[in-house]
Amino acid sequence: MNGEYLNKITHGDALQILSKLESKSIDLVLTDPPYFLDKMDNAWNARKVGSITDYCHTIKSLPPGMKFDKEQGKKFYEWYYQVAKEVLRALKPGGFFFSFSSPRLYHRMVSAMDDAGFLIRDCFIWLYTQNQPKAMSLNHFIERLNEDKETRDDLIKQLNGWKTPQIKSCFEPIVMAQKEPDGTFLENFRKYNVGLLNTNVKIGQEMFPSNVVSTNKINEIVDKCFLISKPDKKEKGDFNLHRTVKPLSLCEYIINLTTYSNEAVVLDPFAGSGTTLVAAKKLGRKFIGIDINKEYIEISKRRLKSSEVDCSGYNAVSTEKQLRIFDKTVKYKKLNKRKIAKAV
Image (cartoon, rainbow, N blue to C red; front, side, top):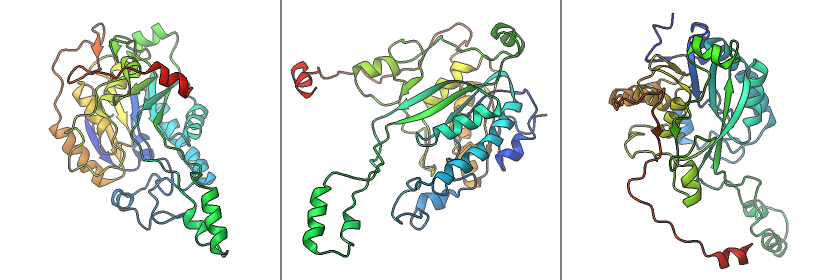
């Protein structure tokens, strides 16, 4: 029944396409949905979001996602609850559902998936250091006050360093949910080949897989435990206009961790520029992609066409898979214990 969608990316509304997929046919769903922040909903336009000027409602020069409105979270919950119900039906018993989120809407996403019938197993954290601070100074508002210059200058001085409540965000949460297994974990796995985690996968310096991952070098301790290979310069593609492309290695990590064989089907109902699909193809898995934006679909097709299947012979059953890759040995600066003690 899924033949017309298998190893392809289909244009259309996710809810409509999901309803056409065969029940109990998907091993893993790995996706990064629209978050409904400042009109970035399930019908967003790639170029409109990319150009940004008159698209936002609070201050015209703000990037998308800066406006805060509780109604956005409610609308997101209602919509994602419907998505999660369809995903639950399509997944095999024991199948996993990983969904990226933003820190401010994670609770809505998890609640929608929980209420739809999923077992919430964990929260993965994608940790990084490079991100743009979003907090804003109030100086431009103060300058427009109908008060004398001395009062305005004093207020600016008083609020020096005090900004709007939007701290620099250095992590992205990923909910890990699971469809309830059919019987015991062992019984379910023998029947559906899904529902367990492959702890042969290693990250950092031969470390046991964890729910924290990082794709950039941070420091010796963090890298030892959580680092996976950093994104390759070519993996995104110069033609890729998507604003939130996820690292290929991060998607590979989750696929390696949760899918057992090359017959496993990985679904991404909000495929974007196709990173999940490229990762699935590279690892020799089957995949199904859906996206409502034709431009993103063309980008995905180009990336899929240029990607190659990894023929290294990795055996998901018993072979250890090391995902941490350094181009060269990293030399870390030694921490000055005296300076740290003074700072504390």
